[in-house]
Length: 90
Image (cartoon, rainbow, N blue to C red; front, top):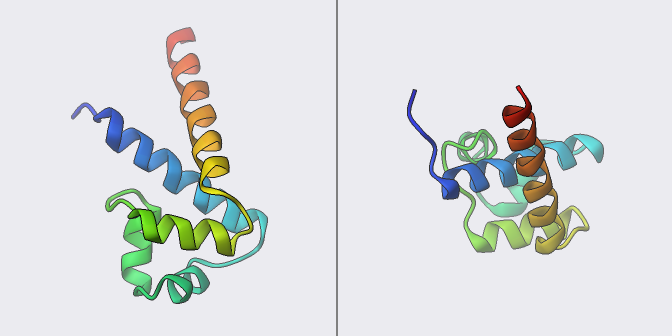
């Protein structure tokens, strides 16, 4: 198994939080793709963590969702810490 870099782990956590927020608000990845001006295929790659969101995309996405960049970053960091704590406890 390849060890994930801290940057890649953080990017995946952000993508996971965006995906979760989409679900909470009952919005789709296709709708977000339209907002960002990217294809649904590209959106899928962003949301599954294989390609990172750039700063402009994150700003547009969080604004559309009614959140701040700081809120998504905070949620992603909290989720990452929770996973690390669970791994250490196992």
